[in-house]
Image (tube, rainbow, N blue to C red; front, side, top):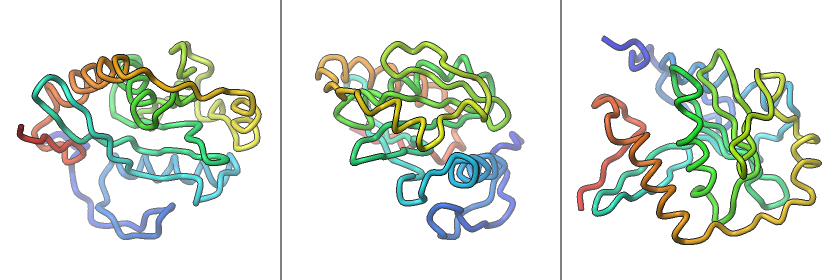
Length: 185
């Protein structure tokens, strides 16, 4: 059995206070939530966990989850995508999510497997930092995004990003992965 789907009971979500299923993956997410609030200075109300994202590829559609969405001054400034395994293989789908979670390009994308972390520039995809210590603090993110224009993602680009996300996140996903909901067309 793949242990990242092993149910260990229940736990209380650090951000929402709701009781949720305790898994190895969720423990990594909770660790990250605590880092964001305790070490990085974000307010809990600026962090939205478990954000559903509707994606499409031709006549297929699905709902996938972006683990955290961080909003400052009314704009999504950073998303965080967690998944076990190699980080490099997660970059492209996380960048696609950063172009779909809002109507504009989210500037900062964090990809983590719970042990390692890469911080990406949402526009270019270039790695800006490595490790949890490189995740921008609230004040750093505020400064980084103060002069951003939050340009809209063109419709054609969003369609392409949705296909990319579907290919990475849905096609070939584990059948027991409850973070993906395939929608029959």
